[in-house]
Image 1 (cartoon, rainbow, N blue to C red):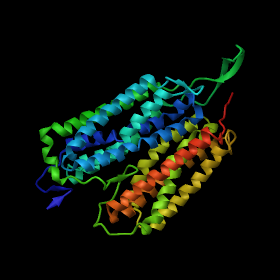
Image 2 (image 1 turned 60 degrees about the vertical axis):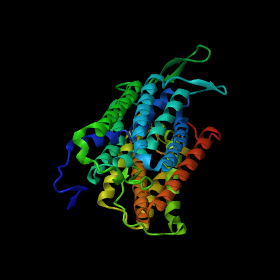
Image 3 (image 1 turned 180 degrees about the vertical axis):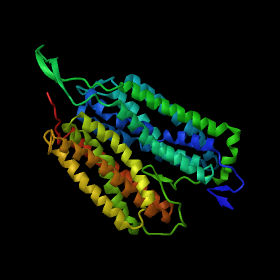
Image 4 (image 1 turned 90 degrees about the horizontal axis):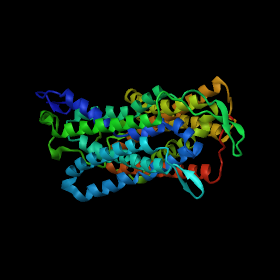
Length: 431
């Protein structure tokens, strides 16, 4: 008799659980960390409030990684399991190096077309995002070599990849809202300028923290590979799950798959269109204009939005355990509520630099609550849609991923053009 994927006579290995949790942390910790650090990056880099729009496009470009890796893995067939191991070592090394170099070089800029740009950070964020995006198609097939009960441990680590950087960023703080001090103007005159933010520790140190988490995950992976005492936790090589049946969406484990049921693409179209629309807003448009939506309410509000929004994702996953989505109308209903939050957030961005209730505690509370609810509701809806499509097999989940990527890319490009080409949004400058 089997229990949790292991036979009754087998003893569960706590060390395997711990190492898989630590391994899972490296899946998205670096990208999540960059977004948690946005309040300080926006204040220091030449792109200013437009910085999130650049980073959103860079992250979307990095999604080429999982596509290319999936093609390579399919071509290798029997050697794919060895490729997964080599890929993990490479990804952890590249991710740790990119985080380390970010700590050293994030302020370095170059002049392009007469304008100063954060070319060092952009390049390093691309490699960070390339590693994290590709983890979706590398880490889960590797983890599938362990008994089924151990997959939960990896998923816990994946959830912590958003929670840990947000907690560290909360501790870091931003040093309060902007204050004006005397500075030097273009002609040597004295003019008021915003004082530099004074967090509890520097941006450099935050990137070093992200690097240390990647190193810890790499060590955990090496131990999972080579400790003989962990052999009972592993399945035979031919028992590994196939790639193309992702075990998670938006960082949440999906329910166990049932027998694949044939379904026409047209029958899935409403759910796929809904997923594309959610992704357009949640992964593309709103992250790109977050600074315009929140910064008029102060640095503290922006800091809380950047950190608490990351916490809303695992919170939504916990809710999904207690109340799984069983009907399309439920996913659509929660998505509609998220859409209402999106409308309010887009209004605050469009009315920048003087959004509603600016300068009041109520305005700050509403914009923070709006962002947290938006992330939580859209996460719940996206994973609910994946759960509804999962019984139809790998083909349905392929189209789910395609709809997600199409919506995300379209939203990020549209927002980039609106912010940087058409100047549709205006920043708020307190001095």
